[in-house]
Length: 167
Image 1 (cartoon, rainbow, N blue to C red):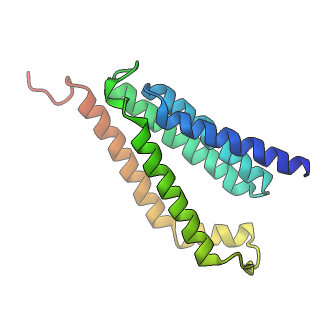
Image 2 (cartoon, helix red, strand yellow):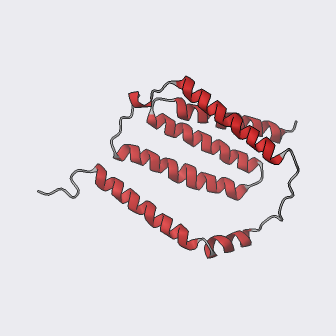
Image 3 (tube, rainbow, N blue to C red):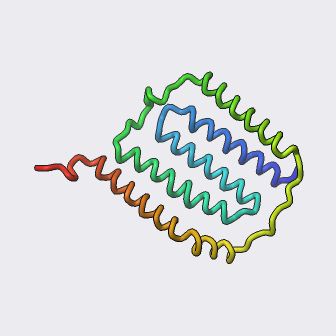
């Protein structure tokens, strides 16, 4: 077992542990911070697997944008910060359903691939990725950015009663 294998196991354990804490905590802000740890560990896994671009996209988009947007939404809507009775649910039915879904997916993957070797395609280059990203996918990317901006402005308007009110 090499050092990379040990690092993969450690980061995988951190990702799974913080993922469990995300869904089991009863405080919304702590769940968001545990999500940051989980997504950071996944980015570390990508770095170990030499997928640097995917790792930095993970950090920039998920950790840097999605979690910050989640925390801003909590702050703007003045949601309760402390423990919430809405987040306290029975854990045994959830564990049974989650475990059953996990075992079903594992059986499905084992049956579908039958432990066979899959030929890998030729590795891509940064030039081909940039051509694809800024050629084919530039319009959907810009539409998505405008949609997220509109959602943020809408969240601010909904959270502030003094905007749009009549005197």
